[in-house]
Image (cartoon, rainbow, N blue to C red; front, side, top):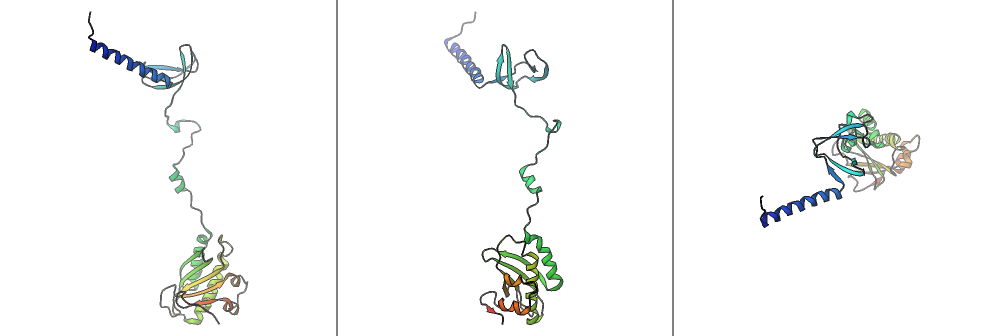
Length: 228
């Protein structure tokens, strides 16, 4: 008969102890592992077979009935093979697919651009300055002279305010037109004409009514004069 030395006996006892600890730890956590090559799953003790588990599959014990173990198992299955499955798009993809909400000014921009480009010059933009409660209209004009520039400022200001005024969700108290000089030179933003919205809300705005409240800057807003 083979005799263990003290050292060998020590290591055998250590391995057995560690294996016992591993099993005990496994039981404490309620996790068991299938050790047969294939084991049946049943809907009750000695009940109907509805599947199999392969060797090494881990299950979570819920309860026992004699030698039968009721368990929970975690796994993955191909979703499209399930009745009632609806694929969820990733958040980034779903967000990209949903159109961003459009602002009233964005909706009005094409109409304002068409209005200006067809009759009054070259449209450069429509902007809201929320801090100043100001709607800014920017356009370039050709060599049209001072008188026609003043008339154009009034007409465009009134037409665009009629177009967007009721749709804006920010308080606006003034409308400003920014252009280049009346002879077609200079940068857009050199000449300003600014008017209170109360004036623009008059149904038929005459040149005299507009001139009473408008103020003009010929230096990009550094100095202002009231239009006589």
